[in-house]
Amino acid sequence: MLTIKRVPTLVSNYQEDVLEVSVLPLYAFKNDDNEPIENDIQTLPEEECQMSFLNNLLLGLWEERMSQGLFRYDVTTCETKVISGRYGFIAQLNEGRHLKKRPTEFCIDKVIQPFDENKFNFTKVGQEEVLFRFEPSTDYKPHYFSGMRVNGGISLSIVAINVSPIEYGHVLLIPRVRDCLPQRIDRDSFAIALHFAREVADPFFRVGYNSLGAFATINHLHFQAYYLSVPFPVEKAPIQKILARKGLGGAGVIVSKLLNYPVRGFAFEGGNGSTARDLSDAVVNSCISLQNKNIPFNILIAQCGKKIFLLPQCYAEKQALGVVGQELLGTQVNPAVWEISGHIVLKRTKDYNDASEEYAWKLLSEVSLSEERFEEVKGYISEAADLQAEEDKSINPEKEIPDSSGPQVVASHMPPDCLVLQ
Image 1 (cartoon, helix red, strand yellow):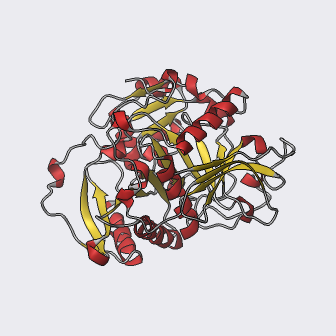
Image 2 (cartoon, helix red, strand yellow):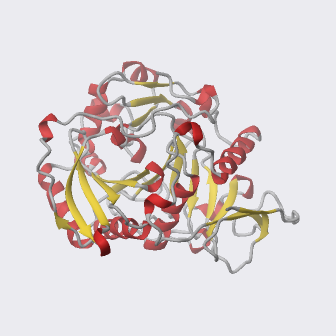
């Protein structure tokens, strides 16, 4: 059960940045990585499900910041549609993000780069943009404190609004913000992101990550997350088991490859009795291997942390080599995690009006590794995460079609004007 403690508000300057802030709300999450995955996520029928406290908290504070005019544009006015076709790719017209988003300030050919304090980073975010701290509890139970004094020596993890949002509830999760970590996956930070998805416990809420070279725009460790009221196309893609790791009592991790999807990628899931730590370790070890080999990638944490997509890509490399067609370059779409997952943010009205499944497929196919390169990456992942080949030969890849995986019912907690138009 969640413990809620109201703490008297302390005096602080609302315009302070996160290095100077003296008080913030604190959500202390249940920190038990050894509990089986299926035991701590709601699996009730939708009509019986209740929103988690963290879900309510995040939405309420985000809407409060929206009413205060802290966003660069009103994302709820952006036109959005589901494109007809097998996968239901989602197109959004978002001219404000194109005009007002911060530019990339580093080279795009290296996945690992040192933090540069002279570039924009999240220590410069104002306190008014910060929603709350997100930290592990010390007693394996969740707690919420409405205002906690920030010790100057603590390297706090925070949740802040994305001032250039793509969708409703778009936030940033910034682990250990004061440590000024570069944008690269590490074990502790990824565990925080996985806990974030699990604690929100809403299948419409996904957490994403972009490495450098895969269209991260800020070299300061962060994850993104937002609500989308329909399944991402990548969630609907058929999969085939290719790798597995057995643990004690038969528990383990299963890795599948995407079938009949324009981007070649991996889906990580826990087997029966596996824990969050099992799943997290497999993903983290894989990501560290890709980082060390300078292979850009994106991550989507879906299904409340039960399924994690790892999507290596090569679009920036193709751009640099001049092998991407001018038609695609002209759209100025940077295929980061959301686009690769099937939610494509377009900057021009013409592109939005002309959006089709054929266009989405063509764009994302340019992102994908070749089959030969994908097999190489599969080998790196197998070695790094101690996985063994275990292919499901009962599946005929040529006959697999998109299924209905992912949330199907429109989320009732989102305002009607934020919902995707069918």
